[in-house]
Length: 143
Figure 1 (cartoon, rainbow, N blue to C red):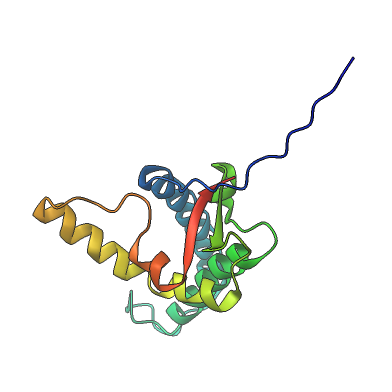
Figure 2 (figure 1 turned 180 degrees about the vertical axis):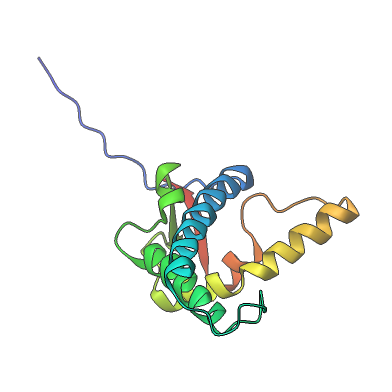
């Protein structure tokens, strides 16, 4: 009996926008649950202010560490991306640095704005590489 071994090709296929949005939804729900628990057990400095509390800085910090940390670690994916079989890599297919993952996190609102404007105007949507990926020299690929 003869066994054949063929090495898996290194060609990376980029993820589509729908899969990425589902992964983001999973991650946002997870972070929201964590932040609600933290909010419940902390004493607020100003209960009347909803968005302008100093604790919102902690929320941004937790989101940044979650997204940038998990996308730059060995797993290369947040929980939502991992569940859907996605990973974040650099252009060359290597692991993303924490610096580039941080750029990717803080420029995500720019991508949301671009998607919103293109959706309203009826222009074609970028399905594979969003602006925050381009700025961070990153790509989201299928495992």
